Length: 353
Image 1 (tube, rainbow, N blue to C red):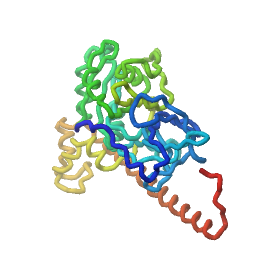
Image 2: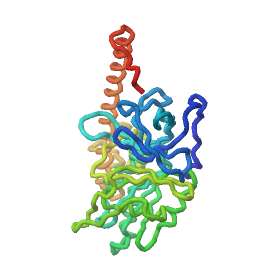
Image 3: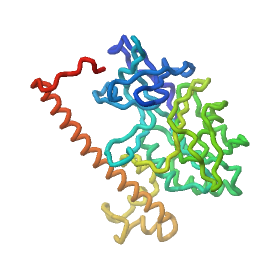
Image 4: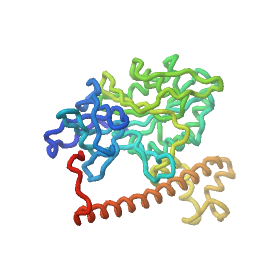
């Protein structure tokens, strides 16, 4: 999949009094924005409307996220007034019991799924993050770090490549500058990359190496080989050549938001085998003529792979059901409010922005 060219900014005609900007960081009640649409400008603080939600062109109020293209106006202070359409979004299930989702980054071209080789890579986590990446609309690229710390990096590379179907997999050692050239080639003007992965995977170190300078703090590993949290927020960094990089905090667990296409892309081998089953509704358990079970019995497909596909498919379906219920409840609440305001029960707040 080719890396998209520089981003085209949507028309500003309906908002002639506003100026374009891009969200670099989100804090409580305010965001840091980079004026214009090209790297190089110093970020400025822009306040959010009451409640933290901003109107968007599709009529939905959104919580802005890092990478969003936005419109700002300046009177007595710089204010964020609109979120422009997102051409891609890396979305996770929110923490806790709420059915709402959280956009981790927007308008991303490449998702760097960063996984360490020391300790050994966690294949299930790679599959989960790849599914999120495929669902975002961006291009996934797997980066295996700390190759200098293991005796057989190539064997571990093959293990990960076997589950990262359709994605490029690069093994790198940042201290020795090995394997970074293909990643630097992705840094074309206007392209945005986001790094996701566990704490200790070396995301911030990788971002600094690609940026050519220290733009994110890094930390030492713990005695057990696991990483410490050094990045505590998501931040967009503009590079001199015109590319953008987003570093993210390490993930212990990340709720899955995905559709069938994203799951099919991650588990293309399981899907292809399922198409060979005798029955179209085969559950891949005890049915006769099941190509998936035959592949597992012959060693062609690891049983772990089928288990992972089932687990992520169940999780994605559960989140979809929760999301549908939440959208229906939001719509009912919206119409109730409209009816009450029409009857005069609620007066619109004249000071609300």
